Length: 72
Image (cartoon, rainbow, N blue to C red; front, top):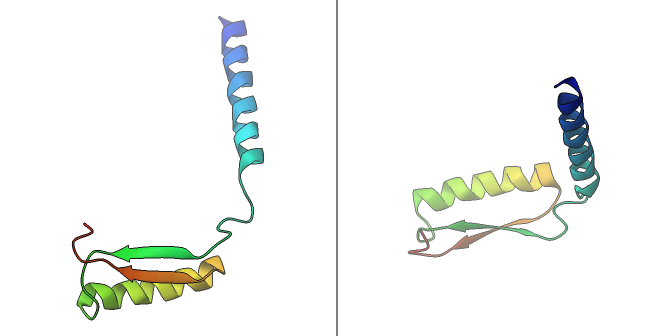
C-alpha cells in the first residue's frame, strides 16, 4: 500500500512538473478579442471597453472589443 501511494505521488509530481514546463511565458502573443453580444453604445459596450482597457494594461497586449449583436 505504501509503495502504491509513493508511486501515485511520484507520477502526479512528474505530470505537474511537465505541465509547468509546457506553459508559455509569453501568453498572449497577439491581440486579445473581447466579444460583446450587444450593439455598440449600450451599457454592456461601455463596461466591456472599461474592462478591455484594464485587461490591456495588465496583459501588456491590446484588447479589441468586437460588438456582435446576437452572438450570445
